[in-house]
Length: 437
Image 1 (cartoon, helix red, strand yellow):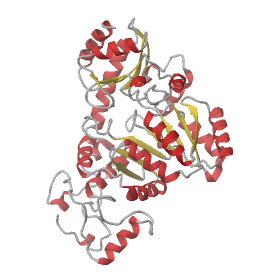
Image 2 (tube, rainbow, N blue to C red):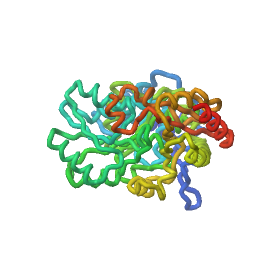
Image 3 (cartoon, one colour):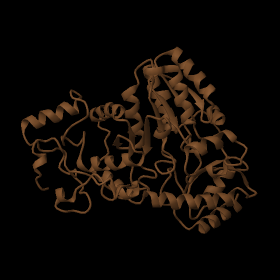
Image 4 (cartoon, rainbow, N blue to C red):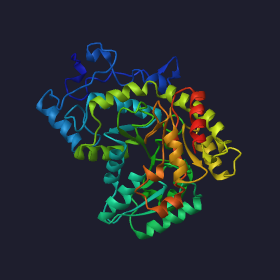
């Protein structure tokens, strides 16, 4: 890497451009454009068009004073994190470029990346939750998230209360009031659309209920935005404080990496950074580089998958062996006016992951899954290929049966994530698989 006089104090990591181009001719550039170069200056890396993968465990300080200053930031003695590169458990050039670009999609002040979606969620919870606290969350949640809150944190005296994903403000406020009477509420945790039912949470109603009850001492609202974000949902605009991602899914988009992310206000992200520094849940340089590659095509991939899903779901909704299709694009004009209202206010697209309820039970669901030829029988979502799974028997197997029934995670539910294949080919595959039921 070439020297830059502005870096001799150690105040600026050398890979950063002196000034990023955020607008041209008075026009603010879109995220899809900024993904091609934001946060990186080729002149600082021998003219390399793409950022290098910085495979190093540690970084050389310019002088001892710079080393002290960097560690003051890393350890929290001075707010804001390190001014420079220190050690790969704390930061690295490839990860910092990725975080700069990730924050752009939701116009967030800061972003952090992690070794998995669950490590992002765990680091977030460890940052804000103390023994004896009461977490309020929407339901359902991803099974591992429910396990982390109810079983793991429960061992330390942490309690939880939840409300259904589509709850009205009055119901949300009642749950929050009850939680407030039980102890300190450190965090309100949401997941929308919910995994695997696709039910939406009214973030604006949650924020209004929280503000009415807690005033200035309000707990932050964190939301898992994996299913629709960052293209079709931007919850920070609707009252959420932190947006969480399994970057494994749409952001990575090729089913070849595992990572997580958190974006939001600097005042909330900084303490999460301190916790990440301590427990070492940062994403690795190789994965960060692959995510940089993936972000360049994120809008293209998600748009194509969304178009495919609309076509496929239109076919499925009329099939004789299908009980119902939990696709957000069908909310308008449907029976659930509440969900339709949330969708209109919060979403700019229906996504490409949906819940398919077959007529029958586990036997029928398994027969359908086993007959698929193009779609793959695998968990996860948001990849270029179409994936299908049975949540009740797979991703949500650990959830107690009575809770699964209450949340609509039934044996006849198949979760489908549509990829970028030809939509007519996918329809042919689903048609023949349904014929095998």
